[in-house]
Image (cartoon, rainbow, N blue to C red):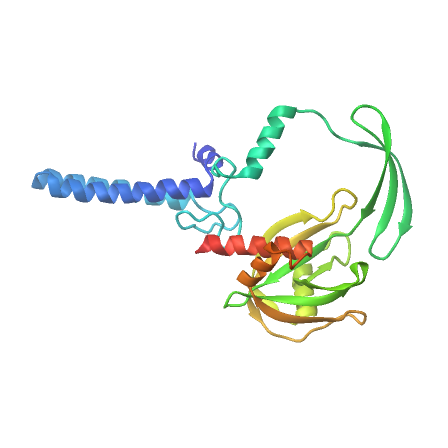
Length: 291
């Protein structure tokens, strides 16, 4: 029964039930103690505090974060311990993306949109990019061609100082012929490399910083229309300064910018790098949820 309840309730919902029940129990106990006769009032007062205690236990048992076991505060949407989301779509009445997905699913049903590979040809085998051209069978039975890039994957980091400043980099990107403001990032060294360890390596090599606390902010696909590249995002806190260890062909400068200023620059279109936009906005949402 308890396992069933744990699966049905999100930590956010359980926390709010426990918190509201605790406050209501204390409030009613005080009211009854003041309004009822002395003996009955004392008994009711004690009973209400027992009820309030039961709700606190409910909060602490069922409100724990799924990932790290942290006990959240009331109304906390993201875990202060690991940054994991504490709600589900049903809790978020204003969750527009969730509503859109549910509406699309309701309209389309279970229609299979899978494209099946018939043949595959490697066109280019580079250091970073590997270009393929496949023939696929479409859901309606017809065939078509698909060109796409295979990538080992990458990581990116939002390194946050104690005064809510982010360590960002200025680096020249040849493909777009301009210097870009970005958060520290880098590709995996080999297939299957631990992504957190890769993030720690990239942060240390590019900026010299190490961190005491790491929060997994999830993953995103950079360009799923033509690439399978997946970037894992991390929030790094408790920073310690060290020395850079750049590659021979790597040139970049790093500096601190207040997180709020970066959010504004993202929203104004001044920062156009996709991983930086996503990482900064996610980090801001997680930190604001902790307040």
